Length: 208
Image (tube, rainbow, N blue to C red; front, side, top):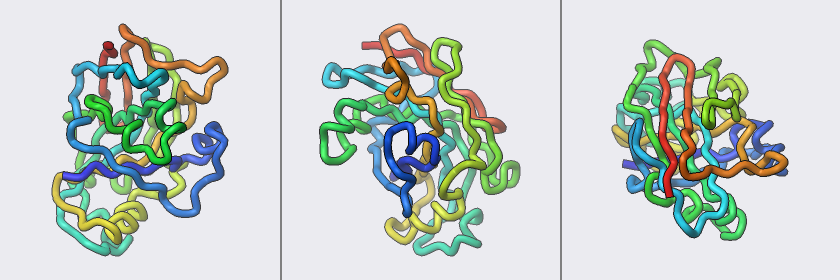
């Protein structure tokens, strides 16, 4: 199983981090040690001085494919899930790549509910929200994705053969704690909620 993530796929999120929107999808990966479920604790590692949650629409592959045509992409998707891409920002910006910052245990909470493509189509037009202790931090919409779900499936399949069970996290909207003034990092005792319209709610406590 592969966890393939897309960085800076909302223009406003790229801008709040001081980056130009990417001309091609910016891909990175997570490993399955990062996966936890609804209600499981996000563990803050001692190496991370600033951890952000990132609300995302995730898709799960249902049919194997390589070099999939964009027009055929939805035929390869089993359905959609809610995901949270945790990021240790101090490490993300000090390292030359993102593996360590994104790869700690518990850094990919994933919702148990799988909503089929027959209900949500290409996943566009869905509200994506992150709440921290009940307060809204992120409120975006998948209609604002720079690269759509069908395009991502096609593009990524040119690199990796996609297998049933593989996950693609499609990116996060603006509002993350790192971009705020003052910055807002996750703390022990916090509760993070990620909600994607039509897909479900993912809720995780935060601990040291």
